[in-house]
Length: 105
Image (cartoon, rainbow, N blue to C red; front, side):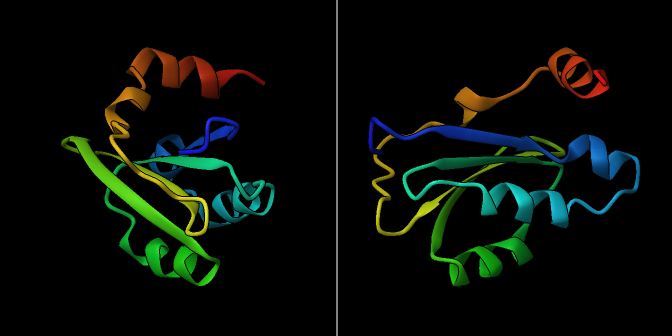
């Protein structure tokens, strides 16, 4: 990946636990991305329907199941993508981090 990129992360697991639809949150984050940005999505399942939506927007993806009920998906513009040896597990969040990050006002 380009070393000048920004990493933008979104964890939708807390929203889905509360039975909230995260699609608008995801699309808002995608709209704010710069062309070289790497978008990391944390989800409780493989978000297969999102792959087609993102492909139409010019993004390729790489996904990894970290553990049962936890997937990390990276999206990058197809023009800028060079996946190389990107280890998605490096973006894994601990449960304590999730709660703190999402319980703040």
